[in-house]
Every structure is written in C-alpha cells, then in structure tokens.
Length: 417
Image 1 (cartoon, rainbow, N blue to C red):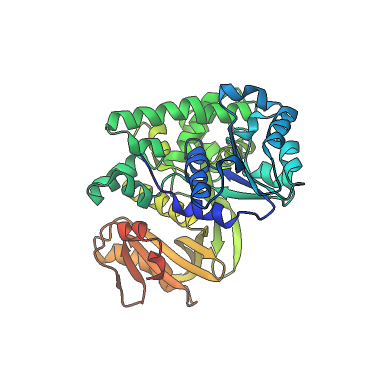
Image 2 (image 1 turned 90 degrees about the vertical axis):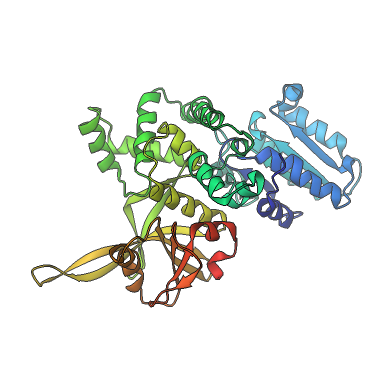
C-alpha cells in the first residue's frame, strides 16, 4: 500500500544541501524507513540524481552486518564516492553502528555528501541528537499517520474510517490490515515485544510490571491532569504498591523519550507563565493507548482530544493546556478566584489559536461550558471549538468558530478558515 507522506517528504526536500545531518526520528513502526528509502529516494531519482550517487544502507539487514563496524562503513561509503558531485547518503537504523556519532561527524567534513539517517527510539532519540551533534543535526520528527493520511489510504466512508482510526490509531501497518482482530493483535504484540522492551533495555530496568502499570494509569488519564504525587497515591490506594513520585517522574521521562507519550504543560494565559505541575499526557498513537488497555475505557471525548493534540503538533504547533483565572460568583453571593481550562493553546511563530475539544454539545449548559473559558480571554487571537457533532462551520454570537472534527482533520488549513 503506497501512502504518500508529503508533509515529511517536503521537510526532507527543504533540508537538502543544508550542510547538516538530517535525522528522522519517531516512534517505532511509524514509517521512517519507508520515508527515507521509498519516498525520498524516489524524489531524488525523479529529480535527475543518478542511482550511483545515492548510497543507501539498511543497517538492520543481516547482509550488512560487516558495515556496522564504523571504519568498514566509512571505507565502503568513501569507496562509492567517485567524483566531486553531490552524493546522498541514506542510512537506516544508524544505531547499529558502534560510534555512529563519530561516523556521522566525519561526513560533515565533506562538502559533496548530503546525509540522511534514521534511528530507533531505543538508542537514538531527539535528546541524543541535541547532545551529540551540537547544532549540526537537523531533526525531522515523523508522526504516525494523521487521519487525513489514514483516510487517503483506506478510503470508504468517512465515519467508518474515523471509527477505525479512533480505535486503532495511525501506525501504517494498521491501515493495511483488514480484519479488526488483526489490527488489535498487531498493536498489542507490538507494544509488548517492541516498545516496552525498548524502554527496559535502554534504561537498564527490570521491573516491567511496575512500568506497564504506570503506563496503564497514564492511558486511563488521557485528558486529565496528572502529577507524580497524585499517581503515587493512586498506586498506593488502588494497587497497594509503593512507587515514589521521583520514580514516577523518571519513568514518565522514559516514556517521553521513547515517543510513546508527550507532556502538555499548563499555561496561564493572563499571567503569561507556565505551571509545571500538574500536567497532561497524550499518547503519540491512540491505537497503542487503546491496545494497552485492551480496548477498555474507550471514551470518545478523551480519544478525540488526544487526536486533536497530535494533529496540532504534526502541523508544527507547540501546544499547551490553557488556564484562565477568573472571579466567579458563588451561591452565597461572594466572589472567589477560580481557573477555567482551555483545552489547547496552539502557537506557531506569530500565530496563536485557542481551541476547545467538545465531542458532544448537546444542550445549552454544555455549549456554555465550552465557550465560557474562551469568552474570558481578552486578546484577539482566534478561538475555536472543535466538535464531534457539529455540522457546517459557523460562528456563534461570541465570534468563536465552531467546526466539525472531520473537517478539522481532513483540511490542513482548517484553522485558518
């Protein structure tokens, strides 16, 4: 199944010849090798680059075992560079090479080498990129399929595709498996045999049961505020397990580094400062979250919120959870300070959007609940409610835009409408 991933292909094309190491990162099985060897290599050939000027090596292939030695790899690549013309080096799973940092830094000394690599998230993460290349590494983060990409691959009715995506997420292999049982089995096996194992091996951990229980707690809490102290109390009361807040915070960082989860911090919109704790966690792929919980706790409002968060990030926005302090009148007539929550504050350069996720806006009380926080924001940036049951795009009396979730996901420019 050919799935065009034009957003990421364009990112690689825009980075050609920029004298940096282009590093494609992302969760396991999200399509990094496919992007590099099928799509980008195809672009190079179509652009007139000769096949002899493209040097591609899959280092996880047993046939390339000798090339995992750094000096052997360097000798092999330099032997393939025959002239001063630009040569494109495509290295998949670079972490199999000992001292891969030294190898990649060696390439930086040659003006006619344009280098692109992928690495698995067990040993080659965005944090490693920053540490090892000191500004000479250019990261392209590859997300699982967006709903737009997923729908373009599977076709059919939009609502049917949406229900599948809401359940099984956007890992590319999921789109090619037809039976629901096959999708579920693939995701559950992948989680146990790849993701969990990666985290344990990378961080030299031995308590897989504790880690999996913590992941389940965070999966159950998608869309809810979490703190290490609150989670520690949950473990103690519900599971009779003592897990310190420091250990929980450390495990949380491991999950983030493996791209399984992403942390959304709270931002005080009026005070213009961050509130570090509590925060919210969202899963990079909603299908993995659901598989982890064995397809229990399938509240569509929380799943939709997670998908909106991921969509904003893949469109290039930095995304926070917004807090709006207000004075609220109490039943006794007195006023007290309270905080209203805006689901997402999305920033990109000079652009900003305030966004509410509302799976159902079934009565006046719910409509008021979603619009009230936006009404208390006194700047001129656009305010949007994305609803699961909305029809055509419209503006309410407050000037807030109301749009349907599918219209939002299927149009990359939907926020600007």
